Length: 143
Length: 295
Image (cartoon, rainbow over all chains, first blue to last red; front, side, top):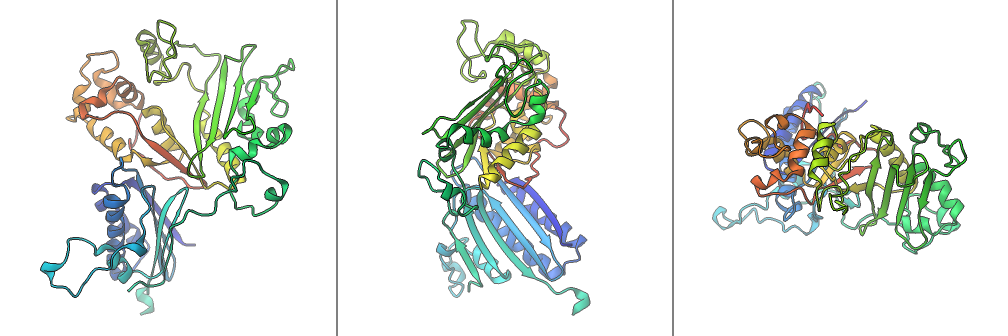
């Protein structure tokens, strides 16, 4: 049976550390390898920051629902919000070759998610926007 | 750079907005949502068969109302369905006794502009409990749940009797089963979610317990909780200046709700307005903006 976890918090910056701790706790109790935990926290952090800064921009922020499912070979993360539709495909790709001083602030969030996660899916419908990503993992006993 | 990215920015398929529904549509793709407007185009008896599911049999049984005929033991009609052809709303009223004004159940669902469903109203009162005239002011003008006018003497009495703002009678404490029925009905109609605007802080707290999340206003609820803590601005504003701002009111959901109804959010330069909640079918969001709350 996969282990399932869920947490809902307001879309505000204070929630980010709560989500990070939540992921740590879930992963620890499910024996997820530490490297994967780091990347999962990074990806969730970036995705939620996007929702807070762009998804609910101009609105009294609503909820972010973070769901987490740990299976033997992978972790599935689902992040749901009810803000503006955010289109990952239309986000500009960052120029990671440019000198640091020439790079705009931000813009690396999606890049980091795509670099660290495996399957990524974004759906919008009447019941909200849902970003789903998968991280394949190798248990320490298998390596 | 992008690995196996799949993006769908278009909302999922929506029901045909033809203003009416045919048998061929009903037996077609069962994942297509059906609008209230389309249901309202059905013949009266067909509508009745479908909409009957919205009112829990347990609620009707408590008043000896037959859930199939909607009549009481004296064969007198006690429930009315209002679902006119061409309308995008359905309303169900149930009353106790001879007077249809003596409602104990009122539910209103409507299509919204996003192909979804709004729960516009839900009132479930105990009709044999004491009634408070908080719905009319002393000139006999409707207060619209105390949102546009207030009947302060009656509100004080209602608060002292344990009611929440907006209530004229105590509730039947069956919102859980009503929401289960609404959700089951909307699943039959292939909807993913439904929306509502909480009238009061108490309503929002109850809806959280029933699994709703916020599409607007979650941060406001967090702020309210934080500022009602000792040292917070709302806590300080519970200064006894009105009957609705007594110092111990921060400790309970109802106490906070009456203070908010009384306009206490002004000290934060905010008002109780614009909150919107969503219930995703089959999912409990687990929101709790007032942990370990006492009602």
